[in-house]
Image (cartoon, rainbow, N blue to C red; front, top):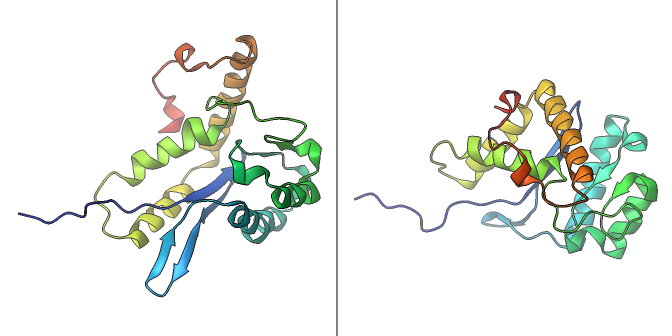
Length: 188
Protein backbone atom coordinates (compact mmCIF):
# COMPACT_ATOMS: atom_id res chain seq x y z
CA UNK A 1 0.00 0.00 0.00
CA UNK A 2 1.25 3.46 -0.87
CA UNK A 3 -0.36 6.57 0.65
CA UNK A 4 -1.41 9.21 -1.85
CA UNK A 5 -2.54 12.76 -1.12
CA UNK A 6 -6.28 13.27 -1.34
CA UNK A 7 -5.92 16.48 -3.36
CA UNK A 8 -3.25 17.29 -5.90
CA UNK A 9 -1.17 20.44 -5.62
CA UNK A 10 -2.70 23.45 -7.34
CA UNK A 11 -1.66 26.96 -8.21
CA UNK A 12 -3.17 29.98 -9.86
CA UNK A 13 -0.83 31.18 -12.58
CA UNK A 14 -1.07 34.10 -14.99
CA UNK A 15 1.01 34.78 -18.06
CA UNK A 16 0.69 36.18 -21.53
CA UNK A 17 2.56 36.08 -24.78
CA UNK A 18 3.28 37.77 -28.06
CA UNK A 19 4.82 36.32 -31.21
CA UNK A 20 8.25 37.14 -29.77
CA UNK A 21 8.15 36.38 -26.03
CA UNK A 22 6.22 35.14 -23.00
CA UNK A 23 5.56 37.34 -19.98
CA UNK A 24 5.18 35.37 -16.76
CA UNK A 25 4.67 32.98 -15.01
CA UNK A 26 3.08 35.02 -12.24
CA UNK A 27 1.64 33.00 -9.37
CA UNK A 28 -1.33 34.34 -7.45
CA UNK A 29 -0.79 33.31 -3.85
CA UNK A 30 -0.73 34.45 -0.27
CA UNK A 31 2.43 33.88 1.75
CA UNK A 32 1.95 32.38 5.21
CA UNK A 33 4.53 31.19 7.77
CA UNK A 34 3.87 27.64 6.56
CA UNK A 35 4.53 28.69 2.96
CA UNK A 36 2.67 29.99 -0.10
CA UNK A 37 -1.00 29.11 -0.61
CA UNK A 38 -2.77 29.47 -3.96
CA UNK A 39 -5.72 31.82 -3.86
CA UNK A 40 -8.38 33.12 -6.16
CA UNK A 41 -7.85 36.22 -8.25
CA UNK A 42 -9.58 39.23 -6.73
CA UNK A 43 -9.61 42.75 -8.13
CA UNK A 44 -7.01 43.81 -5.56
CA UNK A 45 -4.73 40.85 -6.32
CA UNK A 46 -5.10 41.35 -10.06
CA UNK A 47 -4.26 45.06 -9.83
CA UNK A 48 -1.20 44.19 -7.75
CA UNK A 49 -0.11 41.58 -10.31
CA UNK A 50 -0.50 44.09 -13.14
CA UNK A 51 1.23 46.96 -11.30
CA UNK A 52 4.08 44.96 -9.74
CA UNK A 53 4.77 42.23 -12.29
CA UNK A 54 3.15 42.46 -15.74
CA UNK A 55 3.56 46.17 -16.47
CA UNK A 56 7.19 46.29 -15.22
CA UNK A 57 8.00 43.21 -17.34
CA UNK A 58 6.58 44.94 -20.43
CA UNK A 59 8.36 48.19 -19.53
CA UNK A 60 11.64 46.30 -19.23
CA UNK A 61 11.14 45.06 -22.80
CA UNK A 62 10.19 48.57 -23.94
CA UNK A 63 6.86 47.49 -25.39
CA UNK A 64 4.11 48.85 -23.12
CA UNK A 65 3.29 51.55 -25.69
CA UNK A 66 2.80 48.99 -28.47
CA UNK A 67 1.13 46.17 -26.54
CA UNK A 68 -2.54 45.38 -26.98
CA UNK A 69 -3.73 43.77 -23.76
CA UNK A 70 -6.37 41.07 -24.16
CA UNK A 71 -8.03 39.66 -21.07
CA UNK A 72 -11.21 37.70 -20.57
CA UNK A 73 -14.33 38.94 -18.87
CA UNK A 74 -13.58 37.70 -15.36
CA UNK A 75 -14.98 40.17 -12.78
CA UNK A 76 -11.55 41.02 -11.23
CA UNK A 77 -10.42 42.24 -14.67
CA UNK A 78 -12.80 45.16 -14.83
CA UNK A 79 -13.15 46.54 -11.31
CA UNK A 80 -12.63 50.31 -11.27
CA UNK A 81 -9.05 50.37 -9.88
CA UNK A 82 -7.95 47.79 -12.49
CA UNK A 83 -9.64 49.71 -15.32
CA UNK A 84 -7.92 52.92 -14.18
CA UNK A 85 -4.50 51.22 -14.08
CA UNK A 86 -5.01 49.64 -17.52
CA UNK A 87 -6.16 52.96 -19.03
CA UNK A 88 -3.12 54.68 -17.57
CA UNK A 89 -0.67 52.26 -19.21
CA UNK A 90 -2.50 50.99 -22.30
CA UNK A 91 -5.25 53.49 -23.05
CA UNK A 92 -8.78 52.49 -23.99
CA UNK A 93 -7.81 51.72 -27.59
CA UNK A 94 -5.29 48.97 -26.72
CA UNK A 95 -7.40 46.89 -24.32
CA UNK A 96 -9.65 44.04 -25.37
CA UNK A 97 -11.80 43.33 -22.35
CA UNK A 98 -15.29 43.47 -20.95
CA UNK A 99 -16.38 47.06 -20.13
CA UNK A 100 -13.86 48.59 -22.57
CA UNK A 101 -14.56 49.96 -26.07
CA UNK A 102 -13.23 46.75 -27.66
CA UNK A 103 -15.25 44.26 -25.66
CA UNK A 104 -14.30 40.67 -24.94
CA UNK A 105 -16.84 38.47 -26.72
CA UNK A 106 -18.97 36.76 -24.06
CA UNK A 107 -18.45 33.02 -23.57
CA UNK A 108 -15.67 32.91 -26.14
CA UNK A 109 -12.90 30.39 -25.41
CA UNK A 110 -12.21 30.38 -29.16
CA UNK A 111 -10.80 33.89 -29.03
CA UNK A 112 -7.78 33.79 -26.73
CA UNK A 113 -4.61 31.78 -27.50
CA UNK A 114 -4.03 31.26 -23.78
CA UNK A 115 -7.40 29.51 -23.55
CA UNK A 116 -7.33 27.51 -26.76
CA UNK A 117 -3.66 26.51 -26.60
CA UNK A 118 -1.37 27.55 -23.72
CA UNK A 119 -3.25 26.22 -20.68
CA UNK A 120 -3.95 22.82 -22.26
CA UNK A 121 -0.38 22.52 -23.51
CA UNK A 122 1.03 23.33 -20.07
CA UNK A 123 -1.30 20.92 -18.26
CA UNK A 124 -0.33 18.09 -20.62
CA UNK A 125 3.41 18.64 -20.29
CA UNK A 126 3.60 19.68 -16.61
CA UNK A 127 1.51 16.73 -15.40
CA UNK A 128 3.54 14.20 -17.42
CA UNK A 129 4.70 12.59 -14.17
CA UNK A 130 4.00 12.68 -10.45
CA UNK A 131 4.49 16.00 -8.69
CA UNK A 132 5.90 15.77 -5.19
CA UNK A 133 5.35 19.31 -3.93
CA UNK A 134 3.89 22.71 -4.66
CA UNK A 135 7.41 24.04 -5.28
CA UNK A 136 8.01 21.33 -7.90
CA UNK A 137 4.72 22.16 -9.62
CA UNK A 138 5.63 25.86 -9.80
CA UNK A 139 9.13 25.04 -11.04
CA UNK A 140 7.76 22.78 -13.78
CA UNK A 141 5.27 25.41 -14.92
CA UNK A 142 7.96 28.11 -15.02
CA UNK A 143 10.46 25.84 -16.78
CA UNK A 144 8.02 24.72 -19.46
CA UNK A 145 6.76 28.26 -20.06
CA UNK A 146 10.32 29.46 -20.62
CA UNK A 147 11.09 26.49 -22.90
CA UNK A 148 8.41 27.50 -25.43
CA UNK A 149 10.22 28.69 -28.54
CA UNK A 150 9.53 31.88 -30.46
CA UNK A 151 8.74 29.68 -33.49
CA UNK A 152 5.95 28.03 -31.50
CA UNK A 153 4.63 31.39 -30.30
CA UNK A 154 4.55 32.71 -33.85
CA UNK A 155 2.74 29.58 -35.03
CA UNK A 156 0.18 29.86 -32.25
CA UNK A 157 -0.54 33.49 -33.13
CA UNK A 158 -0.79 32.71 -36.83
CA UNK A 159 -3.32 30.02 -35.88
CA UNK A 160 -5.12 32.61 -33.70
CA UNK A 161 -5.50 34.89 -36.73
CA UNK A 162 -7.06 32.00 -38.66
CA UNK A 163 -9.39 31.32 -35.72
CA UNK A 164 -10.41 35.00 -35.63
CA UNK A 165 -11.14 34.93 -39.36
CA UNK A 166 -13.31 31.83 -38.87
CA UNK A 167 -15.13 33.48 -35.94
CA UNK A 168 -15.82 36.48 -38.18
CA UNK A 169 -17.05 34.25 -41.03
CA UNK A 170 -19.37 32.41 -38.61
CA UNK A 171 -20.84 35.63 -37.24
CA UNK A 172 -19.27 35.32 -33.80
CA UNK A 173 -20.51 31.79 -33.16
CA UNK A 174 -18.39 29.15 -31.43
CA UNK A 175 -16.06 27.49 -33.91
CA UNK A 176 -14.60 24.46 -32.13
CA UNK A 177 -16.74 22.06 -34.17
CA UNK A 178 -15.38 23.63 -37.39
CA UNK A 179 -11.75 23.03 -36.44
CA UNK A 180 -9.74 19.85 -36.79
CA UNK A 181 -9.22 18.11 -33.47
CA UNK A 182 -5.59 17.36 -34.29
CA UNK A 183 -3.02 19.85 -33.08
CA UNK A 184 -0.68 21.48 -35.58
CA UNK A 185 2.76 19.90 -35.45
CA UNK A 186 4.44 23.15 -34.43
CA UNK A 187 2.49 23.13 -31.14
CA UNK A 188 4.07 19.94 -29.81
